[in-house]
Image 1 (cartoon, rainbow, N blue to C red):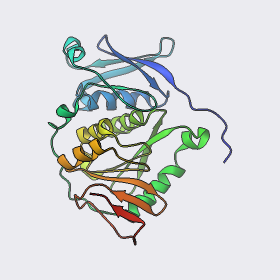
Image 2: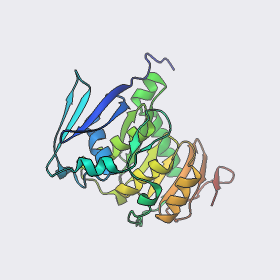
Image 3: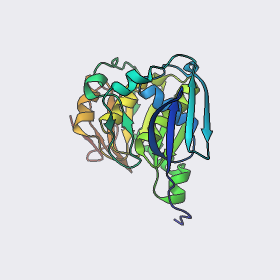
Image 4: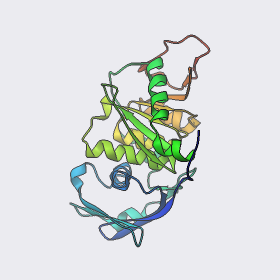
Length: 253
């Protein structure tokens, strides 16, 4: 594989109704999707209609978001910040206790594990920035017809915010979607998925113990190590069934 460049990351200052939220290290692609996804994940918006406009000022690196509603910046800033782990370091205002107050997820969709493995392989082959640089994370949603939408970023949580923002802007229904990610599923990653309402989440790597505990509490199916013909099913919600011979798929409840 001939890679032509290195991954890009830029300091992006997020401003909401004139209040500076934080500076984030981001890849400068799909920034509007990221703004929608991040603000939704943090509880600052509920729907796409809450945002009037998003403007990026290249010179200052400022992403200005204007809401169609009032925004209590002082109340938001009074909450304790939790800095996320991993590349493209971010910030969340939700603690584990906060996330446990989210609505539990309900979905009747069921998927064979072989299907998730197949879509994971397609996701990898369609991740243009990763193929270009070898240093990007990606997040992908799959609809009922098997169609995929992909967003990439230097940070795994940023990529998830971008794909959630895309889904919000397109007004997609979370119960009809599967979320796949290249990054480790930690508690803040699980909380983003739970806030939107994904019922099935898969990753090419591991999930943390805290994320698995939270997923079980919120009725979310989590599958890790989706590689080739391998996978680890961390939860037992019955939404992913093993149609492959052992030891290709392992159950770790």
